[in-house]
Length: 433
Image 1 (cartoon, helix red, strand yellow):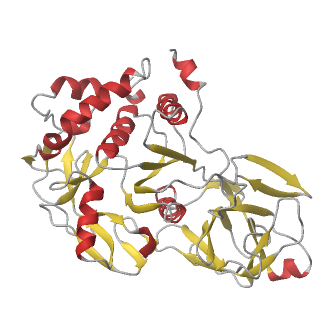
Image 2 (image 1 turned 90 degrees about the vertical axis):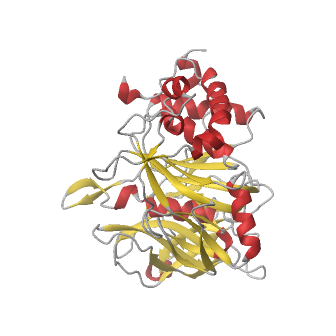
Image 3 (image 1 turned 45 degrees about the vertical axis):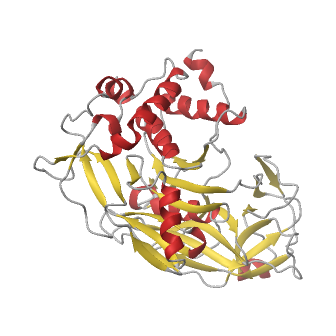
C-alpha cells in the first residue's frame, strides 16, 4: 500500500471544532465547544487576561433553523489560572442549563449574547451544539449551515463509549515524530488506556498517515483503543492594526485540558494528563487503572493521584540490553533510554495527575486548581512519571533505570512490530530526513 493510499483512508480528525469570536461584546471572547453537564453548560473559551463581561446570557435553541430561543440563562465568564505573563488566557463560560420543566430535551444548541443585543432581538452570531446532550437522534452530521446570516454548527455526535482510563495529550504543533506518536499510543495501551485524546494544531503527512491507519482499524472493528483527534487551530486576531496569533501559554494548553476533562468526564472513570513524551509508570500493579482503583478503594474521597517526575535523558546513549536493534529500528525512547536523573522532582513541580473527573472542576498542568476531594501523592515505589527528553539542565551522569523496559519492553516490541508492519513507507521522524 502506498503512502498516498494511506492518506486517502478515513481520518480520525474532527473537522468541525474550531474557535469562533463572539461578536458585540466588550472584549475578545473566542468559544470552542459547549458541553452539557448535569445542571449547567460549560463553554470552552479563550479571552484577554482579566477582561470582564457583564450581562452575558446563554441562549438555547431547539434546532439550527429556529430563530426563537427556547430558554436563556445568565452566563459567567471565568479565567482559568495559568501563567500571567501572557496577554490571553484559557477561560470557560458557565450558565445554568434548562430544567425539564423549562426546556430540557428540547435545547440542543447554545450561543452567547449580551443583554442589549437580546433586547434588540439580535441573536448570537455563533451557535454551537450541546455536546453530551444525549439526544437519541444525534448523528455525526459534520456540516455547517448558514441560517438567516448566522453561523450555526451542526456537529452532534454519537454518545461517547464508557471507558476506564482516558489519556489527554496537549496540542501537536509542527509535529512530525511518528515514532514518538506510535510509542505514545502503544505504551498507553499497555498501561491500560482505552481512549487517547489528541489536539491537532499542525502535523506532517507521516503523522496523518499514522492516525489514518488507527482510524481505519477502529472503523473496521480491529482496534480497541479509541483515538480522538480534535483540531486546535488558534485564530489570528487583529492587534495594533496587524493580524497576529494569540499571545497565550503553550498553544492554549489549559483550554485543551479543560475541554478533555469536561468532554469525557461522564464517559471516563479516570483521566490522565500527560505530554507526548511522558508516561505514568505503575511499579506494583499491572495497569494504571489497577493502581488508582486500588488506592481510591482505601480513600474514596480522592479526586486526584499525583505522580512525581524523573527525567530520562535522551542526550546520551543508554540502550536497554537485549532491545538495541528494536530501539534503533522503531525510534523507541522506552527501549533506547535507560539513563535517568538520580532524583525526582518534588510534588507539584513537573508532576502529572490521574484524576477522578467527576470530582474535578478546574484542572491545571501540574496540579488541581479546583475540585472536591483530596490529593493522593503516589509513593515512588508504586508509580512515577517517566519523562523522556533532553536534559532540563546540564546534568551529571544519572542512574541506570530499567524498570520501565523490564515491565513493558517485550510487550512493547510486539506492538511496535505489528503497528509498523502496517505503516510501510511512512517515515518515523521527518526531522531526521
